[in-house]
Image (cartoon, rainbow, N blue to C red):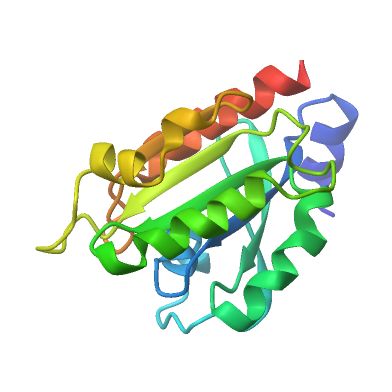
Length: 188
């Protein structure tokens, strides 16, 4: 820990750390989004599918995020629930160009929201949705993604949906700003 880190910690200026779960089906762009949110000198050039999970870090203007990037492959989705307790927020990524798998994404979201434990169901945990891959020809709008996932039925948690293109980084900052505001509102 450097001198500036120690000094900022003593003065109470150190950024609060929050744990975020990044969920969604495989190939939705979760890892690409998280990679794009990291400082440019820390970004990976080659993105490979996540096996199991990985832990990444990035900072916003007032928070330090530790993100659990969870694999979206079918055989790994049952591992998600083991991390619910740690999460203070959720980023749920949807491939907006994959209409066929939108039904599966909705099923996974419903399973998450109705998990019998108290780690998600009974907490007012903010959920940020990225309707990703908006650059693709077959992409549907974020409004349509919201309808297909029935997000209007989520009444007990703050949620927000952003259209995004993870490769170009479009829509990501808007989402992180919203998430930061929601987390800070809960912490105060």
